[in-house]
Length: 218
Image 1 (tube, rainbow, N blue to C red):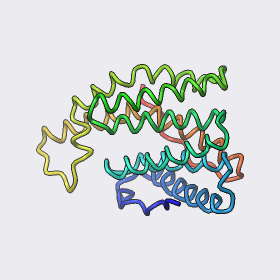
Image 2 (image 1 turned 180 degrees about the vertical axis):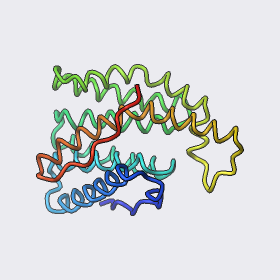
Image 3 (image 1 turned 60 degrees about the horizontal axis):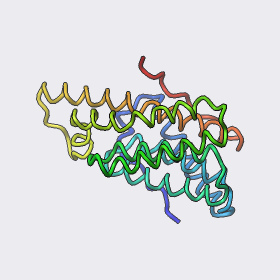
């Protein structure tokens, strides 16, 4: 069983609201891991675990984010082996594959992940056709490959893969800010979607909900 590794000191740079969310989902991930040891066939718990890991991946550097996202995918796929029609797991898995795709610079490789994401979003809609958020995710999935081109054209991938402190000039700083804005615009809907799944799941398990995410930019 894979264990969730302690997160990096990036929390030092987080605002209070983000730090609260980070700590909440760290705790939620550990709680789900502990519950898994006693009941590995609890699809709800596996979905919560996958959702928590996907939230945690958003706080990490490029290599760690990619690794944690893959762990989230593994847990969500495991939930679907228990209950193949679990619509929230299908939806969350679609978001996980979307997130993973944006971390991959190569267009063709990323497209395979986008295609998987669209399939899972479609399955989620099929299971719960009136769910507007599922429908919105499916719509966004169609636009994702184009957004992928834009985000990597602006150098997001290279910056995310860079390690060590930045030695940027004013121009590089401006470019970094622009890429960060692009990242938020694209990932914002994914994070929001996963957070809603997580809130519902944790409410059912009698856990206090995390603080809400900041509103998406208009």
